[in-house]
Structures are given as C-alpha cells and as structure tokens.
Image (cartoon, rainbow, N blue to C red; front, top):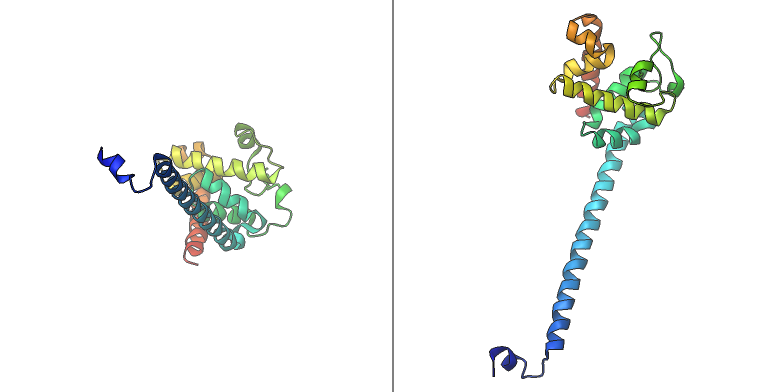
Length: 186
C-alpha cells in the first residue's frame, strides 16, 4: 500500500481530497476578490476626497480634472491650478468664455490648438481633456520642466523656445505655481 492510499484508508477518498482542494481554491479566490473590492473601494474614496479638495480650484470641473489628470499621469492639483488661473477662479459661463486673445472655454484653448488636439473647444469635457493633453505635451517637450511647460501653455511653445513674450509667460507660470503650491499645502 502506498503512503497516499494509507492516508485515505481512514475513510477519505480521492473525491474528498478533490473537494478539499476545490474548497481551498474557492476560498483563496474569494479572498482575492474581497481584497480587490477593498482596494477598489479605497481608490473610489481617495478619488472622491481628491475631487472634494479640488472643488475650490476646479469648481464644477473637479471630477473631470482628477480623472483626466490621472489618465495623462499628471498631478490633479497642477491641472486644477491651470484651470483656476485660466478662469480667474470664476467658472460661471466658463464653458463658452472667449478671451480677448481668442482662447476658448474652461482651459482657454486657442482655436488652432483645439484643432491640433482634435477637440471641440466649446464642449467643456473636450476642452478640459484637450488642455490636459496639451499640458502633458508641453511637459514632454520641455523635458519635465514645469515652469517652461506652463509658460508654453500660456504663450505657445514657439514663443517660449524663441524667448518672445517671456515676461507675460513667466508671470503666468508663477501665478499657476503659486496656486498649485497653496493648494498642495491645504
């Protein structure tokens, strides 16, 4: 008699062993599912807390700012700070706001930039996503230098590369960074 058959001589069968293994696997799967659900719940709560914190900066767009920033691997506070500065903290009518320079919507995209990004600047969701994508491109173009990326967001990458409109662009970047830093310390 083999050791395995001796172990089952006391009334256990191979079917019983299979059932025990199956139940163990089921428990392990259930535990993994429970852990995954807990992680998902924690992620949802963290997202909600971040949206709540950013409501002061991003107004009615806070939830979208968090989602879009995360999808482009950007800090939501930075994106919200750009949005805040672009709108002067006033979101009433920002969906169709047009600046004196011709920039449109919540994140104030120039028409040529909106076309380049294939977004409708009059649709807030597309406008914000386009603004986030443009900010990400500027960060990439200027090798992660936030100040240069913000200057390029405001005045365009060519102006920054050529050094034109430097004073205005620098003032804009400083304003965004100031809002960003104050929001990060809240």
